[in-house]
Image (cartoon, rainbow, N blue to C red):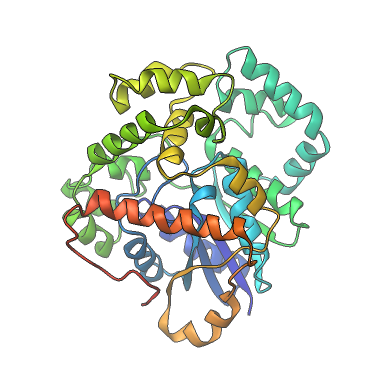
Length: 374
């Protein structure tokens, strides 16, 4: 079987995601489209607004054939690790032949990745120097890329080149198919045109205008969703208060004494106040949120780094029923029988328990918590 993969969060699924799924099938001529999706928390250190099984069902209804889960230690991590974890798992599935992803402009991301990999030492030195001078990460990344600085000035394009770099590390087996993102910008909060950003939709969950930007079945679930963001923030702030400084130092991005700043602020300040007081040109609000979220999930750099050297399990969330008999055997993998892999799985399972604790504090709405057929 010829499978095309897409790495995603679907928080929530919107018209742009449906367009990408359709584009993947059209561009590659594949037999099936496989999504590897963040489960309960995102790369920006935020909580997903809908249950992972609900979002997986949305993906199947929007044209995907199967959805597998990206383990939490990769999902709540910087772009490089987010990409490497996803590509590592996809590369372990022999029938996955291609990777399709959205970007601001279509380019030869494989060539960009090779340039940055060849320049790895010099690139990282330039990046570190710019960060030390107080530049923000996205700006520093684009400047450090030199000849590709114009291309890498947006988060979507940076993530695209990280996919390509991860693909190189895994042996360049996956064919890359970039698709130009449609509609409003990544950071846009406007509901306009045909395609709105996930951020705009999350900011207008119960607004009737949102219906124009998501499939009907997504809107039906969004209308019933309760906003538990404040409960998430309170739990994350409480976990930071009780965290050990050495444990914080082991989280991606928590360096240069940032753990001391976070611990000092954890007494007497709210989640939003901690973010505001830690954010500056050097430390983005996304980086701070991600550290606090990773701490809540007990996810650390050591676990993720070691897991990248192992054979990882494949957890299936949803499958298109007519393809189940043919595609499920291709996705069956328990991973290495290794303490690191077991911990990766435990953190991912716990992250779902934490998500459900936040969203269903009284245990109501006990939906399917195993693979679903759609």
